[in-house]
Image (cartoon, rainbow, N blue to C red; front, side, top):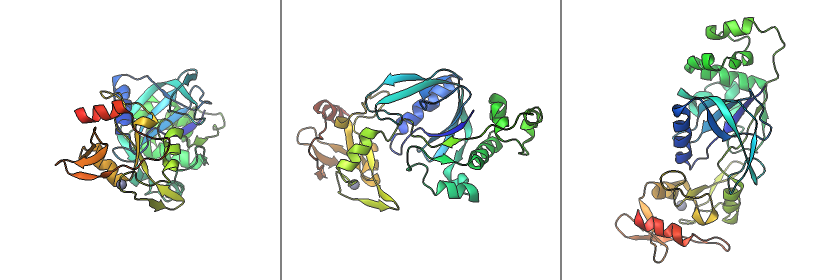
Length: 292
Ligand SMILES: [Zn+2]
């Protein structure tokens, strides 16, 4: 049994967050991405980047892992998506935010290792997993009743609601392994597109250098998920800096369907998107933009 920290959403995808939340709230079982190696009783801590960076849900792997052919959404391999049932899948009434995580020195050191932007697989220490679970349970004591297995993970802690489970556990504690895995977002496709543009904004050409590389986002022109049903395909994607990305998301700017220039709310020309070889927006996608 392991605890997996699973980034379930990259910075630009609030739709995915909303859908996940809705599924959790509709019932106690959801079908969602998991590691290929997921085993029943693995505990997933789902963290999302919207509306802010936080651990928003906990799910327990309940069944076998299904392999799904997919188009753009990947789980580690870039070609396959792995799905399983999480039961229960609990939406945290009080999510654990990045700001709170950073208040604890041990967690801060781990967090500064850039778990979100890091390599697909980073094993972090059992201590980090324990501290994360403790912090989540402190804010959401009801979760301990719904997922009693969590008690095994934090034996020795002073959480009264878990003492019964701890006392009855004579077996040596399981090794806690927390792996950092990208679940659904920041797919190989979007990563490749970012590279194609050398991490520069297609609109303003800005390139943001951060420690260890560059930061840039991928915008879906036609939003993913209901009701827009946009696809996670290159012809629906733009590489944008956070500033331009917000303008697109909030409809402060749009793409003129006739000539592809970017115009603002007042119809004033903001500029032209630059496109590199092998990338263009689909005509159907531009059509949908003009109707918004
Ligand atoms: Zn920009």
